Image (cartoon, one colour):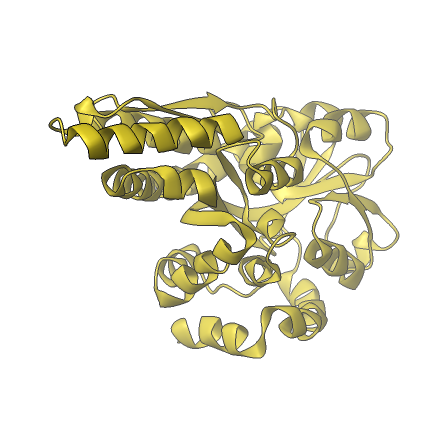
Length: 329
């Protein structure tokens, strides 16, 4: 990492000494790495592909971004830590995982906080969302842009979920985030934090009873091969976030910084545009592969979500919580 920063500093010095040599193509090539946990074909992969392609195009080939899908660089929590430490340039993770560094990011994951996917996108890309992204900078991370994975449900092995009462005592895999711990407990289940690459085998071996995530993620990881039931509960809407090591970002020229920001925004829009259909297609695919689909009664879940809101308003800040609700009125 230090060598990389020294290299960038030498590049900047050379430009200042010898003068500007022309358009972006004249700058030394900037090579960056980005990681995410899903396949390259998944929504996250489509976003990262857009990010890399647009950055290369806008910089006339001066910015090269190498993509590491499938959790090659570790789970989401590991990659957030790597970005913070400068061991990884960029990562695309669920925003709930970013809350491990900055608790305010939990606002995006509160159960039943969003009225619709459209209102979620509008608020996140407005003043409230920009303010949350900026909170990462004191942590050594640049919050670039939001993305979308969409609504979440439960994929289970051996039992159906028709109402919140069916959650009682069940071991449910969750992302490594305290908000998800409290949400599953509020629903009566036993939360099991677990890195994404480990979930398939845990379901297969019945070390867990089910997994809580977005539908496209379930299908992308082929978890339906080792499960029996899907509950389309839509209890949480998952946004994602593109993160970058702040030192690496600051080492770039102003022009390259602008290109990275524009490319990350376009990557998020690519995810948003594809997420709804991808999740609908995933539900249909799992049903076609023998999964029994239920649509639990939502009010029983929503009634228990208020205790999660009350608990996390302390960490998120009541002003942020009120701002999110007011922005949707």
